[in-house]
Length: 154
Image (tube, rainbow, N blue to C red; front, side, top):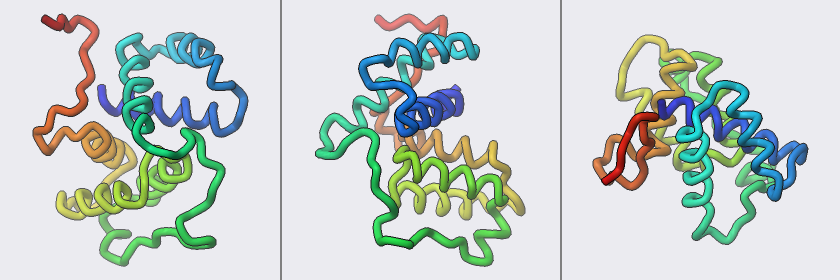
């Protein structure tokens, strides 16, 4: 389910970066996502994550800046290329470009992929690692969680 929330984040950031939808028209994005088959809980979780992520930062939600250093980008080492499929690395670059992942989080995803040690991680496997990185699923902090559709909070 967390992978679906990441898909929603990608969609939202693409819409906002492309300036097809203004921030004050988020209900249009929400309605479109529901038509695409996402649940209200998944959509709400994505918007909540965005809010939490950027609430304490002094930067715009949609940045129109390039890489940290002009003309620079992360190149995979030979061993990393063996483990991470090109589609998975392309997905990471897309998330970085959209501002969903920062440089440190990209490194963290690559490091986790290398620790798995599989011979070739697909884009779907990278999506799972990204979801666990973004939602802090491995560190036990419980800082963010996504409710299932039938979940009840007491």
